[in-house]
Image 1 (cartoon, helix red, strand yellow):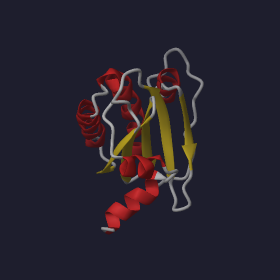
Image 2 (cartoon, rainbow, N blue to C red; image 1 turned 135 degrees about the vertical axis):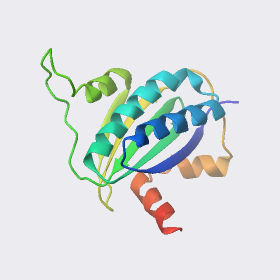
Image 3 (cartoon, one colour; image 1 turned 45 degrees about the vertical axis):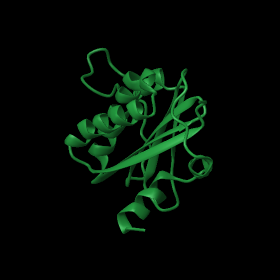
Image 4 (tube, rainbow, N blue to C red; image 1 turned 90 degrees about the vertical axis):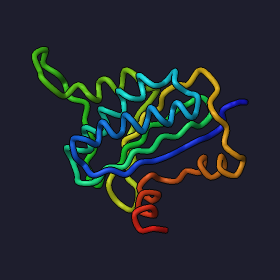
Length: 158
């Protein structure tokens, strides 16, 4: 089977445990999608993005999407600010997260959905095929929907 599209999301309280929960979620999803070749990079990228979101806010949402040859790690929080890649001193104890994301991701960025907050996303390459969803699910996932709108729907029970 060729990979077309798959996706799933997780909503968490912004607590230190959110990073560990995210890592468990990603490992389970990638295993079920037969996309384990991206595990190490996805875990590191998601850990860095979720850590930043936990420091910024009270609610964090993580979404994984497979579209074609790419895995997208998307992290939403309700703060509008844009994360900055900092110039680091050699002895700095922190601030390397976005440098790691830049190094591992094919590309990354930030979007601001109309409903508020921000989504920081990273694209990772997937060299091997993953699980294929039904054509209906694939079409829906490929739509240019924003993670925040999906999270708000889930929270409101729609």
